[in-house]
Image (cartoon, rainbow, N blue to C red; front, side, top):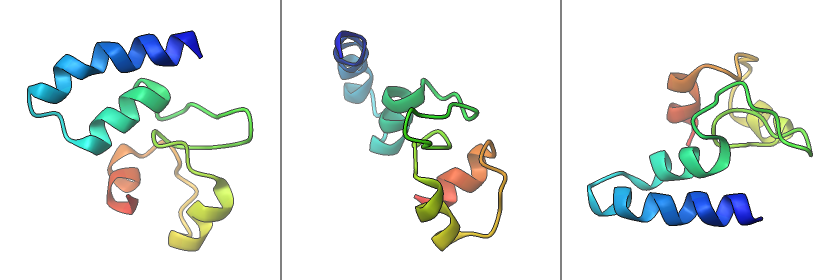
Length: 72
């Protein structure tokens, strides 16, 4: 929890310099690490549950940043 708060506080200046919300979310969730897998099995830079991912695309390329960005 402290780490997320520290990361969030470090992102505040970036937001004022035009970082869009999804980029900020990606930085907060995974630090833009496309291979990150959450404790509950969340995948991709946006930490999406696999069941939700499968509803949107048949692709299993969870580390594809461009695909994840299109799915948002």
